[in-house]
Length: 164
Image (cartoon, rainbow, N blue to C red; front, top):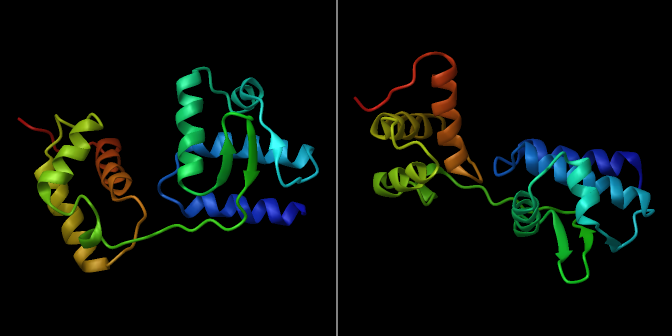
């Protein structure tokens, strides 16, 4: 395994919309441990060390992030043995908005309300995303994150649509 192989694995994280900065920080910490262990097939993962390297202070955040990296196919993790393996080929399933679980407004509203957007005019953002998706036909692995990006962008630009 070489430096360029690690760079290739890290490049995968830049296009995966399911990942946020915490996922990437933990993944980089795990890749660092993998490198220290001479890229062995399986290696020990010490929770405290990974949390420190990833600048995570809460154990539940660490546990959730490890679970998601496992679920997303980035690592193979054995919590009993506290060992990890790096998955060298990550399969990211992308889909159109029409194929997503939030294509119906009811599911869209439910998903985003649970994420703390209950005061946002979700009908406006649903229509905006639906129109954009119909026109551009983009693919995504996480349409909830796409919706959040639309909302955050409007908030940063002072154009956030809220419920009156």
